[in-house]
Length: 173
Image (tube, rainbow, N blue to C red):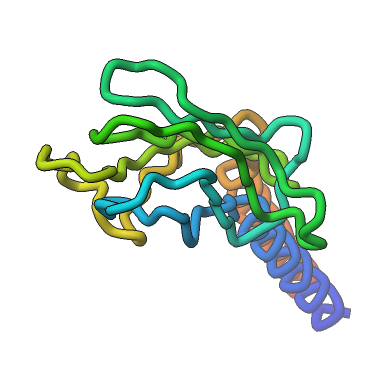
């Protein structure tokens, strides 16, 4: 009987911890065209962002702004991509300079991620440092409402403690 209780408690803890890990996974930007920090010789006509997970097509967008803050393009989920993990949009860039892509996406897991990066078109200007590498896109990693990591971990600890107390009580009988 004690072994069954111990196994049940261990299984409950394992399942709780596994579900906590799943809820903390946020979509991340994995690639972009143009790439962050890239200085293009030819003005792009579209921007593409690729993420590592499915996006909510109604709540995921990006904008492209010039150095003065004027919007030169927007994008949304490319519905022709089966994985629903790509944003695409047309841009109208006619002047050399630095352009900023700001995105706000909602992953299928319900977590919103925001970030931005810059690229240049025929510019001698410095493209902002710290955003010039593909692996350095800046998503907002703050906990979103509904994150279950803290409560799930606490629940796992409480379940384990209750299981151990039950085993101890039965052993003392």
